[in-house]
Image (cartoon, rainbow, N blue to C red; front, side, top):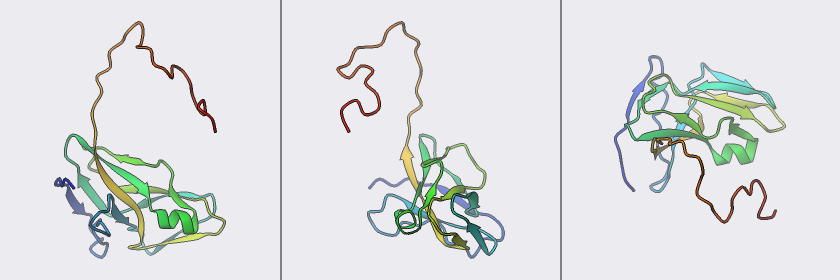
Length: 149
């Protein structure tokens, strides 16, 4: 697996929050931890921005994708609203995770808990060119569900 350097900074008061880390050798993502004061309650249907207590400097040509943790999604209905959330290479603010409780019971986000994962992905910037016609394809304008269920 290709490795790139991503600089990371812990914000003051977050020395106890673990740095993002992969939980296995082949893991695509690094777990992000909640830097809430003590705990944050998410009621069913509620959306909250949960801080991670870190800032990152992602190299040009890459982005950070903030994705849900499958265990939280399956067991509690906890997900990332704007999944995947994007951390642009020129963003230097606090990394936050917009969590939603899609479950039936309240969920308590505890300080230091793993709440999402960060995946570093290559990106390409498109250069748009206005044309009069687009090339034809077999699919053409077939949209949602056009190939069946």
